[in-house]
Length: 462
Image (cartoon, rainbow, N blue to C red; front, side, top):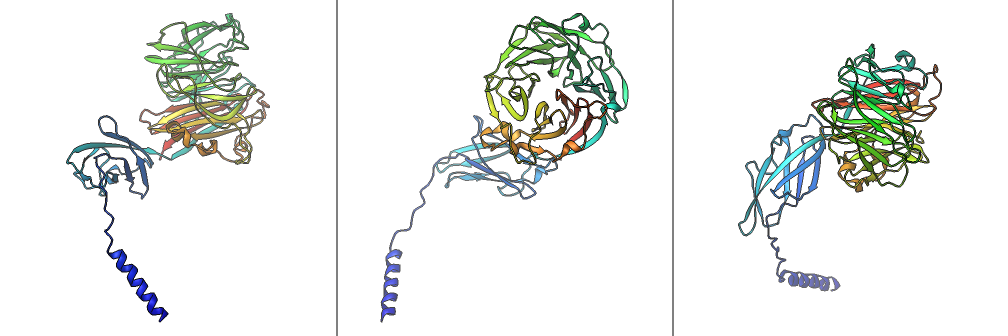
């Protein structure tokens, strides 16, 4: 009898529910696209929340292989539930994203809107090939004297306080010494160049240092390794606390056409910037950039702009009590305030950070963005790579500096120790220079460590 009551009860409930009106689907009006899914040939799916621009163009960047077949990418879209899509190629089938892809969304009221998707696949992997490495003894170093490296055409340029030499890029064989004809550094307050660099076209620039207010620097430049030096500008260092200039030089652009020269002022949060057109400075008086950060730059202060322009965003190095740290600091070129500041010290990650971090350079390889950096102290040095594209796109999504590490080999200091002929690198000096190929698919990276030697890499997108 109890089972009979249960059956009757269940049947009664079913009857009640079957008599209720079914839930109605409430239409969503409009013809807006709010999301897109991109499906790569390798099976990787990436979802985007999208906001089209005023022309209904949707620009998307996606990580992938340089070998991705752009003609075999599929797409789906998020639209109102009663809207429809009209497309020459149905969504879900292969589309050719080597060119813009357009489709129409038609709302419930018949209103039609055309959208265009422009997709760029950013290579997410790079291959590293060591071209060569040579000790300081093999390169003709002298103790504490070699502090910078440059790249000009088929040559690597090595700085010394008494002259610059150039070596074959392919194998490191010495090819010659650069001219210092007409250089008057010996007549100035500080008579030696502590640094040297090359611009994006391979022109060379260097100046003597100024280590106190009132001292003058003379900046010279060369149109290649066999050219004679030409005076670019003269500048007298103003009286700032413990100010020095000339320890780090950076040039973005092409000095023969259009470029910007940067000198970071040691022990101050100040950058001096000169604009150059057709080999001449626009003004002998530099633009003085004072930036706002929560620490004071040290002796080896450095700035690396990410692109051309007076207000280009830029990277600077990090200091704690005048000691350089392994860290990433990305600055807004208009406000001169930090966009992103990473931690500068994390324990138990591979091993404790050596320190250093003042020697670095930035590369944009078809949208793949990297920082190549020396981690070093007086006893050792390591070469490493940080990938910074995601950080530059959305800093809020970066948990800590470890998520930016692309290449950091444990115990890498053992691979290339200091040259015993020179002893410790007391000032922990060195430099990194990157030269991106014209097509953006590869780059040459040169690392120099004072009292140790040079390593040259070829880096290519994969």
